[in-house]
Length: 392
Image (tube, rainbow, N blue to C red; front, top):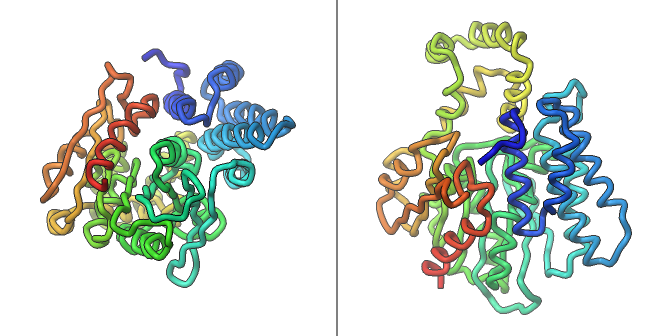
């Protein structure tokens, strides 16, 4: 497809925003006019123009239905704005824009006529925030989709790629902020962990205790880095009836290490933290954009040390002995032109011991790329059709 920006990050992010149109989280005209105002490659322009579009929507009066619709779109645009905040010179801008995105999302939650409940999920002496949506107000137990975000996905992304489609088919649908994600990171200071079963099990505990959740029909969908976390979790949490890894991820660190020069990989292998970080600091002085991306990627790991970041990433690996403990059916997506973990969806599929499926998404379908950003409808149809065959 033709690019909207020469800046790779801007182009990918715009595709993700446009994907929200299918789920009511974007409007084509709003997106294209915003794109037209953005100076290609200028981070401050990106942040300011998405923010301006969101501000205009949030300032407009209307019915509760219109207020909800506009707040949802504004939250999506502000979520996009956060992606370039670290590329500006403004200290604290990421947190500021993230908070505005979350307030817009909560305005949607408050204004929508959908039954939705904010959750506080008990977790290791604190709680994790979550949102549970129901397709109607009936209290009978029903199948429930749990959406597990990736390393930087927003709550609006959970709506676009999971919640909205599940609700249309009569499911319950929920999402949560795990350690290192969204409010758990920004407001609570919790950071990523590789043993994600310790996150998913409290989520399942909270759900199966509810009268409106059928404990035998809980499905778990993980996107982006969630394609590692979900298989890891269901290897130990066996109450999940079916799981989806979109895409399948076996070794998270490959996406981190792919851009490191070989001499830095050797330094990393040697374990010399001081020398590695000093070498990185010298190189990053000449590459401020790379420094910004690294700052963004390191934040959820709770470190400012590149050595600690890359070392931690190597701990996010699925081994045969872990995958061999998975007992539920697993669907693995394999998009053409997967830019972070190419080849790993097939690798994960082949490692899985039991009932499994691999679904390919292609460029000819308009469905290529990481998490199929421009094929929200097709992606949802295939994933939900498969889940319904598994959970009934």
